[in-house]
Structures are given as C-alpha cells and as structure tokens.
Length: 302
Image 1: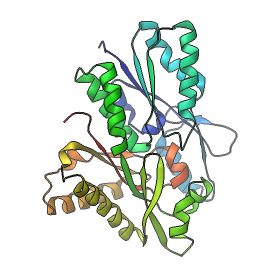
Image 2 (image 1 turned 180 degrees about the vertical axis):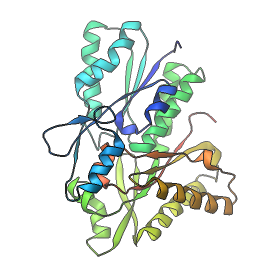
Image 3 (image 1 turned 90 degrees about the vertical axis):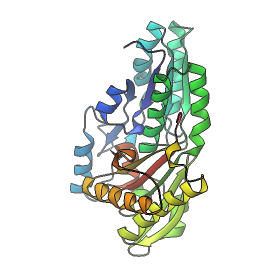
C-alpha cells in the first residue's frame, strides 16, 4: 500500500511484531546481552519470552541493553529516502538512551546521498508500552489522511500527556540499571517494601510505596484513576495499555481488576479499550522480570 509518509520507531516501543507490520511501522531493535560481550538484536536474534526466561532462570545475572547503531538507522531510512517517502522516526526519551542521537547521525549520512530526504526525528520523552501507544497514534494520524507537518505538530502536542504508572518485583534491577535515583529515598532497603513509580516527560518519580504486590498494584490503579479525574474523566480521549514482564496471567487479572474499578466509578470501558503488551528488554533490564503497570496518553484524533 502506498503511504504519504512512513513511521519508524526504535525497539523501546515494545509493539508486537505482527501489530507493527499490520500498521506499517518499522521497528529498529535494541540489543541485549547477558555477558556484556555478545549483544543480540531483540526480537530478531533473541525473543522477548526467551529473554525473560533467562532472567528468571539466572537470578543474580543482570542483563544490559544497547541502543541501535547509526548504521541500523541508515538501513531503516534508506529505502524511504530512495523512494522520496518522508519519515517520522520516534525514539525513546533521551534521558534513558542515546538512540535518538544514532537516528540524527543516520539522517545526516542519508542526506549526503539524498539531500532532499525528509526525516523528522522525535524525542518521545517516554518509553516502553507508552511509547508504543504514541507510535500507534502516529500511524492513526497518517492513516487518517493528516499531512506530514500536521502529524509532527500533533505528536509534539500530545507527548507531554503521556504517563506510566508502574511497580516492580524488587529493587535489585533498578539498582543495577542505574535508575534507582529518587526512588531509593522512598523505598530504601526496607524488607518487602516496593515502590510505585510514575514516568512523565522523560523522568521517573516516586509515587508511593507498598508492602507486597497487591498494595503497589492498587496504588498504580489509583494513580490512573486520579489522572483521569484530573483530566475531566474524558477516558475516550485517551489510549491506555497495560504493560507486563514475565507473568501474562498476572497482567490479565490486573486488567480485570482495573476494569472493575473503572466501571464502578462510571467509566464505560471494556477489555478492548485496555490492551496488554509485553514490556521489552530495553526497559526490563532496569525493572527485572516483574514490572506491571499502565501507559496512558492523549489520542491524536478522537
């Protein structure tokens, strides 16, 4: 199918491969390593399920991720530059990764051969399933017939509305991943205490603590409800998804409980309104195998 412009994202978007293909979105993978020597392309050379299984089986081994290379982006941009098709490339928040710089370097290289290549690189200021929702909104805007510049402008408008509310299984991965920061002061090392974390505009913030999984997941739900209340209860204006790590059944139960609470507060929602996506290696190297929470962002069009 001919398209007015093409959407590209780095692998932090955590979109299932079949969904990205269906929506005509190109994903440029991150790399992951368990030994700091051999780095494998996520979802190409190592599947995400296999990645999580290794995390669970090899407790005490902390994997690392690496951003896409400049050449990876050159390879992604080139076919569209050759055809004269404009590109919008969406990258994980620059606070977490240098992926956007790789994309900018690649754009400069591609323009040496195709000076007129139209490639806009956007700092999503978000990541994981929330970035996935953002990328899907970009595809919806394109497929609605919106023009290239108007799409870029609208994406810039909505990205600040993005939030992630989530919890983790334990603190160890946050410590090893260097993402403990402000969260450590809240959760500390108290036995059984786990943080609830908010990500907005590229930064993570502590949003509470709880002893045990039930309390922290309930807190994540309350943060979602509060966000909707603060924004006029207009749930139809927002895209929402649940992100999980290793335990899909837990995610399904979490969605059921979330729907019960939302319906109890008068929201007209169903399962199709809150899809479940698996959080990829890019973020789970920092969270461990048991992250669970929400991504929410304003829709590009209603």
